[in-house]
Length: 282
Length: 336
Image: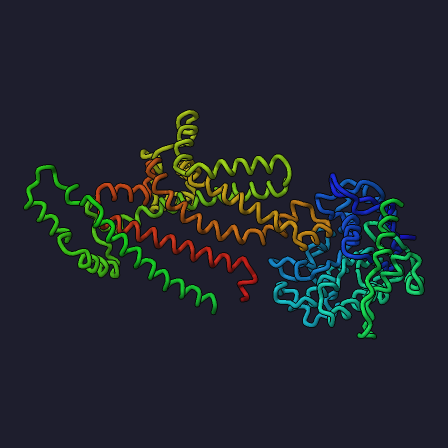
């Protein structure tokens, strides 16, 4: 059964244009689904809509976001907030800005467990220690007492990942979690997320623009262009030969690190024009 | 280590500042027209009398000589003798200091509470009419200076609806069991809440007049930095964790947004203390400011000097306190 079903979701700028057009996507329990597309395609907007953190200037005008059988959009705001807090988590894009500079690391992991989920302070702290060990942080007792500015970007992202898994969420949305990191760190972080996901059996929606990353961690894939899903497929089928011309061009545009002499193949203008026409009129 | 160095450096700059203030005030009060001798003698006093009294107070010597004599005394803790009351300046000034401190701190507390509440409410209800109302009220509060607020408040709550006292520090007929001049603090410590009430009833309007402009500044600045903080990633992350908007503001945004406000409040608090001079006069409140005006009217040179030096000490002290609080609240500086 699908844990998350987004059905015909339409999001628009208040008094402005469409940002998401009739988007549907499913994430089964324990599945990792990639969500790719170029900048501005609306990848992050989908994640924000699911988590209820859309900017104020943006509104959902249609569709359903069904989480574990309940349409979140029909719940009253406070209930929806608490349900999301208890069952979902976000791994944010930029670890440098996603931790509160005024609070110690320990609080940032344990607070929501105590405040929202009603854990005991001691239980939450034990859990935080265990999680920091899981994300391979040495001396977790020490790190819990540190402030974000004392830690490197990679360390902070590990902490955010630990924090995301803290409450055993059913769904995690990873919003380009490696984009802001060093290339050398990216791989470790990916491995860590994939490992924890497998261990906990969490459904994961992995937002990225990097098809290389998708090939490593995802089982299924949605390709987004201009706020519309143009292809919904499995990883195997996608890399064997994408069905949609835009997907094919996107795949062809991915640089091959194995051959440094090869040039870049940007998505051809004709393909872009065709997909734009399709999205806007289809 | 860094803290010790900061304080040491501050003490040195403070000493230099105070010396500068001493020189300026010493020269200015002697250069401006009017002299204390003329104020003391009845009309028609002979030149002999004038010369004798001038020599008695050492005013016949050059300004540089006078400064050296006065400065040597100050270094021994002797700020001279008030010309009008013939009492030691230090005792006079320190006797009045508690009244002014209590008034300023009460005003500051009122400004922080009211300004903070307005900023938090405005942030919680941003984009609504309430926020617009807070902005308009803030603009009005700021565009009227504290002494005009004093007059308005006297008119409203002293004359039209007389609910507060508008003159003095305490009802004169009351017997005060206090051993210091920190009346308000002592009344609380001695659990004499009847006296606390009387004191507050006298202090409320002048404190409010001093607090209103600062309230508006705090409300505007804190609301601005709260609103900027609300867009940051860690605030968004807290929202996904199930925190309500109010708790997100209080727990995530406020600790960070408060830092720039704190610096400004420090600077503004020294202006507020400066404002006590006129406000105390207006409400006949027996503090330093009121004494300063009397001293200027009477050309009581040693007293003016003493009061100005004390104000300078307070200003630099407040600034030091703000810097230390800032370091304590900002973990990035604490471990720097």
